[in-house]
Image 1 (cartoon, rainbow, N blue to C red):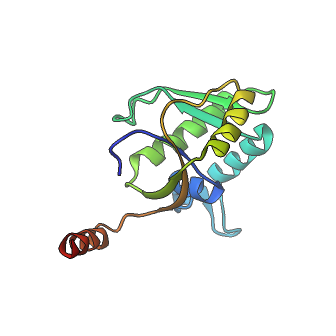
Image 2: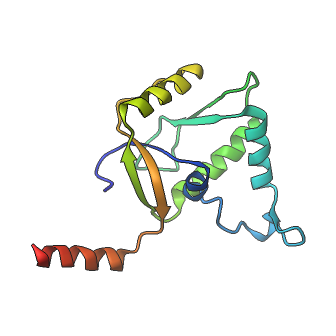
Length: 157
């Protein structure tokens, strides 16, 4: 409900939505002949193929998305180049400045948290104390429908 902080984990499709990668990019990034996105999505794909896994941790303000203090970790032995890091920062900033999402999720059980801890320890990272949520569904909130449902619930009780 947005009343507390958490760590939200997602599969590729939901992560793509959260990062707003599904939205049509500016015309300069869209190649209508091939129907592919350039250079953002291709560059991101190249980064993921090169490094396997990229973890981003924010030490900045959760209230001010323009003042993010981001730390990047990768599962490869290589370091991110400054161009790769800048691209990731632009993607994250774009995701932070967009509209709100409605995320439906579940709290990770102890087995999933253990699995997460093993993966993070390989990258010299630890699981923080926030609840860890697995995003099952990500979509645009339908405030009118949500308000109707809430009123119905209140009237029935």
